[in-house]
Each structure stands twice: as C-alpha cells, then as structure tokens.
Image 1 (cartoon, helix red, strand yellow):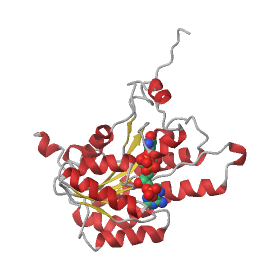
Image 2 (cartoon, helix red, strand yellow):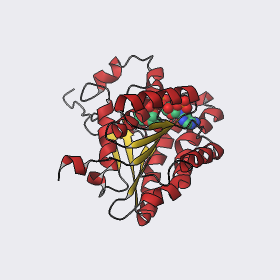
Image 3 (spheres, helix red, strand yellow):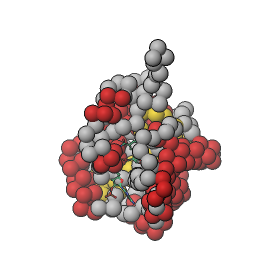
Image 4 (cartoon, helix red, strand yellow):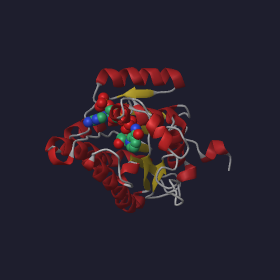
Length: 266
Ligand SMILES: NC(=O)c1ccc[n+]([C@@H]2O[C@H](COP(=O)([O-])OP(=O)(O)OC[C@H]3O[C@@H](n4cnc5c(N)ncnc54)[C@H](OP(=O)(O)O)[C@@H]3O)[C@@H](O)[C@H]2O)c1
C-alpha cells in the first residue's frame, strides 16, 4: 500500500505521441520525474528535439525525440521502427497527438474533416496496432502494459466552437477505448482514456487568443487544468494503482461535465 509502489512507473518505458508541448509534454514530464524512460514524437523535428533535451535535463532522466507525422500509416510505421531499433518492449503508449479544426457549418471543409479524423481517430487505432508487438513483450498478468488514449470532454458534452469532426473524433476515441480494451485485456494490455477539460496549450489557446479568463470563470473549480492534474491521472492509469481500471474514459476537467449545476431559482 506504499505510495512509492502503488503509483510507481520507475524503469518503465513510455511512448507519448505529441509529447513536444501541451498535454503530451505534461504527461511525459510526470513519467520522467518518476524514473521512466520516455519517447516523444511530433512533426516539427527541431521543437521535438529541443523539448527532449530540456525534459531530460530538467528531470535528470532519458527523454528521446523521434519526430514523425502520425497522420499517415507510413509515418506511424516509421516511428514504431525507430522505437523498435532502441527498445525490445514498451510498457506504456499514450495516444495524445491530436488536432482541432473550426469552421461554420455551411462551409465546413472536407480538408478540415479529414485532418481531424486522420490524426484523432485513424492514428490512435493504427499506432496501437503497430505498437502491439512491443506492448506484448512487456505485458504480464501481474504487470499489464497500458494504452492511454487522450479523448476530450468535447466528445461527451457539446462544445462551444463549431468543431464538428473534433467532437465526433473524440466520442469515437472514447468508444474505441472500450472496444480495444475488450480485445487487448486478453493480451494483458489495459486500455483506458482520459477526457481532458481545458488545459492551456497551442490548440485551445489559438481558439481564445490565449486569454483563458472566460473559460476559468465558467469552470467549477475556477482554474485551468495543470500538469499535475493530467500527469497524476496518467501515473494512476500507468501504475499498479490503476491495474483494475479497464476500458474507462476518465474526465479531468475540474467538474465541467459532471459538476456544472443549473440555477433553478432563476
Ligand atoms: N488543451 C486542451 O484543452 C484539450 C482538451 C481536451 C482534449 N485535448 C486533447 O489533448 C491532446 C493534446 O492537445 P494539446 O492541447 O496539448 O495540443 P497541442 O498543444 O496542439 O499539442 C499537440 C501535439 O501533437 C503534435 N502533433 C500534431 N499533429 C501531429 C501529427 N500529425 N503527427 C505527430 N504529432 C502531431 C504537436 O506537435 P507538431 O505540431 O510539431 O506535430 C504537439 O506536440 C489532443 O488529443 C487534444 O485533442 C486537449
């Protein structure tokens, strides 16, 4: 029952897609700060490389950058091959890389639809498929490997912005999590999802000109998400503490979905 054992990810090998910034960086940081080895990927090689050096130094740990575009099968296969050349197995895969696209409904483009669906849905499935051999190598009944998919509260509730495929993609991620969990639990691989609420990042920031005051005022706990919030949840899902949690989508949103009451007196 000691916290050091229950929540430990020490010596585990984790892959975090989209780990160069935002929520992916927050999750990679939680692993690195607690003794895991982490591989991050993103398209912009210079940014990804610089982030891996920064995180390795900050946490005195091994973070490796392997830049790749995961929106195509080719990019996913290249990334998996590069990890395979270094590691004989991985313990944790975090499917975090994602994109959003907003346009008014009457002009919403096929380009925007495909960009969001390719990265947020297709790449989550095929990254999991292509990493399966490496995940299986580490998976045991006593110590299962983990897949954590990053969904969104926009896949549960209704978003403010006109981001139609984004909501559809995230609802898809949540249900795919259950379907994959049902199949992969047979291989001692546990699949769960995190549905974040608002976290400061390039993605959300660009939608609100990096002014989060409105979002904070509507949030039940009156703040944005922090690295510890999503990092702590990822540690739980990756450790012994989370080994009886399977196929779940857990919100991390300050109560946006569950604790937003309606004032019936008005
Ligand atoms: N921030 C929020 O409030 C929030 C809320 C709910 C859910 N989420 C979800 O959390 C995840 C991370 O979002 P974020 O807010 O941290 O976004 P972000 O700051 O835009 O970061 C996205 C990350 O994914 C990488 N990426 C984008 N396209 C890629 C591609 N084709 N191949 C490989 N990597 C790619 C980006 O690097 P490059 O651009 O260099 O490729 C970056 O590292 C997403 O799945 C998002 O939907 C975020």
